[in-house]
Image 1 (cartoon, rainbow, N blue to C red):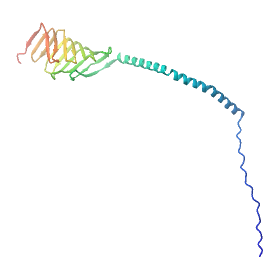
Image 2 (image 1 turned 135 degrees about the vertical axis):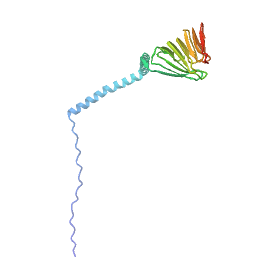
Image 3 (image 1 turned 180 degrees about the vertical axis):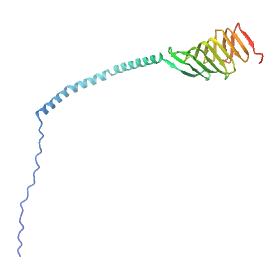
Image 4 (image 1 turned 90 degrees about the vertical axis):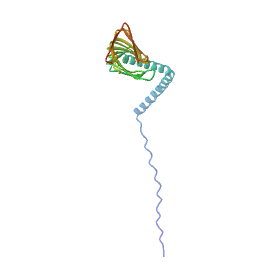
Length: 221
């Protein structure tokens, strides 16, 4: 038996990869790239110089900015301070921790300490626990000092039924003291009294009147 030899196939040579296509750059693109590089060479040193100058001048810039902010805050405070407030309300406590409240129809900040009031009303708790209300046409409130000056139809009411009318009065809200040098008319459980002035002592618990005075006692008491 004869076996025929298998036909030999020639070995297929490996295929070589196709050469990569080289990107063609136009002359215009090359010119643009050259211009970009030239501008970068100019701008980078200038930017570095600007940065160094900013670092060197930063303390002075910060001082100028702070000065401008302080000036702006001052102008804003002046604008608010010169404005008129409607229905203001001030609350505080006296040196014994007793509360008092001042309200008004309107208020004008006339200075760092002074507030001019229209139709002020003060509600004060006295040392004895007595409640006192005062009001007038106008007033001046020295907020940080706790002092209230009243003028024009000053009216005082104490919750024991005592009322008093005069034309001016000065109150120290911190101590509960007060005084007035104008003629005063008072009325209460005791009767009626006309005098030339008054003074509130003992934390406002007692009222003293300056003569000459006229007292009419209520005989029903």
